[in-house]
Image (tube, rainbow, N blue to C red; front, side, top):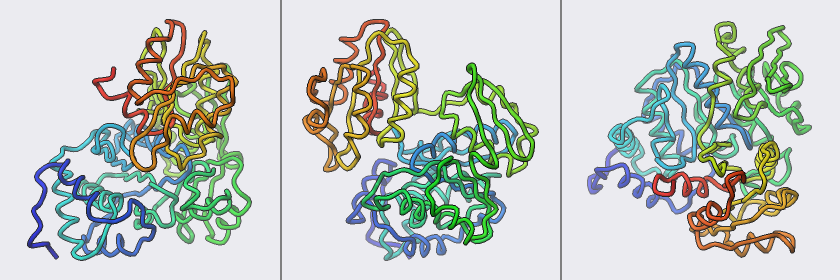
Length: 416
């Protein structure tokens, strides 16, 4: 069905504004509407190996490692992930490249025609458009990152050949529940009866093994079927099948590399992989990314306690004379649990507000820090970043974190 009165946008920006206008809420959990439109689109995924990746943290890095490994082996890939940092087109990479704005516009038009009277959220519409583009290209592998949860996420309309859970922690409690067990049940929704599963959380919630057993999954668990260790700047990986690999310590979390290597083992791809080269080259935009030196500048999208804890470990590995923290966060995050561990560094804090109804003010952040911290409340992320750079000495470290929005403001070309 088409919309006779609908003036089709002529640009990607126009389409994105339209997507924001057509549904009353950003999140509307449930798959029925998306499944109906997907059926109307008649997309063929029968020849594509689908890997779906869920988890609280580590989804993006796991997807990127899989993408770079499969590319090295000569396979065609499409990776769908969210959110983007600077450019909407970042959400879909085909053979490691973004597609043209025109390609995205054509896919949006196809979804618009197919949806008829069915209401779709921004994320659902975007996911269906990405699936249109993937189906058109027929890659060997489609690697799909779950946006929120798993069971009711739009990505879950496809049956995965391998379902992956990276980590399970508390985030998005309003939608996923306030215990790790409730979160695990939502994320395990990506699994299918008798399917293949890889679980990267070495300390999974107690109910996850029960769910895996009930679904009769062929599951590989971090710490059981596969494991890793870091020693003297090297990464070592072992599987129960007897495969041992090693290489330089990667720039992304080792636990996610370990999980991705198990997925590659399940696909039968490990014997041909140049792990040494892959581990030395793999990196992900916005994840422990170095963007400056003298002073060193590290940016990371960490926005929940687990990811903030990992970032703190990385920061402690620097021999910085003084640490300067540029922070902007959303108020529906556990702000205090993210920030308090960093007080041990005796840092200089540069706190910035984020816009929109979900953004926390700089005062809100400051009020959650203990008395006696060196705090500067700034009018914007850009202002906070500029103040930090101005105050930092050459041997200091500036760290920008707290949200995708925070990192995006610093990575904009005009700010560098």
